Image (cartoon, rainbow over all chains, first blue to last red; front, side, top):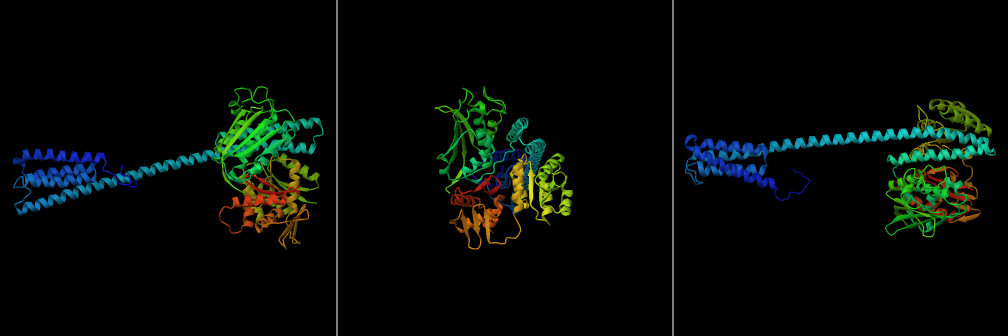
Length: 364
Length: 221
């Protein structure tokens, strides 16, 4: 392929091949014409050469074709124009013939290769346009599919959340002093959590999560993670370490706080009331944010360290009411942000979740 | 007595909101779709509008846009969409605040109170929010009777937030008022100044709360 964007390099192998083929063909044709010369005369051989050049021009590059033109003119002069086997030409009409042959051979070679080159360039543009069209079409289809998907998610979200809103507003009006109403309240909150988890895992799995990093303070992230969990976190003192030393961070704080909230919620479900939960944030030398969330519960059963992030994974003995989706969502969100989350048991007991996230930083 | 207009397509939602608002002394009118909502707004001249974003036909954003062409009635957005971009859009078209369904009644009523308190011409050069006092005449601010040492940018920032005390202000709205005419993205600078301002405000009953992807809210305890 002739790629104009690439700098010209050494002559490609196939062009060298064309040069040698060209010379070989001229040699063969010259020999044949030499044999036939007594019957045909020298004009015949000139036409045979021209035909060879025209044919070569339809397939080969310009260089070899023009070379064939020059060589054939010389060969014709050398062998077929008297006096033979010299480049000397005696008769003036032969000089004119030779000059004409020379010009015709060169211009034929030139014109034909040019024509062919234009044709192939045209074809190439055409093909590129077709590919472009196809790519555009594909992109449009994908965008349309994504839009449909989002609309569907939005309307499902609307349909599921509206009745929950109605129940909660009605309960607020009723007051939860009646123990039956209090039960409805608890169940509604649980239902709300389940619905939100299902919607979120759908978003995560369909790649509908698009991180939008912006500058933020780590304490804001903690605040947005903990404020929807006030009830659950009430029996667990929260200790936040290292946050005041962190610079401004560029990350999607909504996604990170959601990932964090799920882990915190998970911790509150597995540890005894009154036990502390620690959040320790540091910046690694590779400018990744590392957050460790450690609880003082029983820790993870063996071999659950990877499995807890699977969908619907439930540790044996986990309290009823979880969806088994929270941690899967956390991992999905972290990975959507090019980060990750892992967990292991702390040597001194309790589980420790470790979030890592590459971030840009700036000293406040 | 305040008059509230509810524009929501869910009948049950309207009925409940009506009960809730009437129990708080509101006079309530309602509309089940956008066009009718606009008519009701023109006819009843409500003091506050509760607008659902997910309306069939004329969508919530469009209703808001048309309403804002002739009215500056406080508007509270009710939304189930937790997509931040939509909320920011609504706020920048002119909504005053939003609650995301499912919301608590207390939260809804508190937001309604706050957005009705705003507006109206200011008769004094002072804005007061709880223990915070911003003196626009002398470019001074006090918290709990103690003068705050602020840079001009911090003062401008505090002024915007205090004017909207209790209400959300989007990042763009802040930037437009504090750095008018700035074209580059000053979100980083904004965080830095917010950070300084927070430190100066300390723990004295006024907090600047960040709502991720949306903006800031000055909360008075």
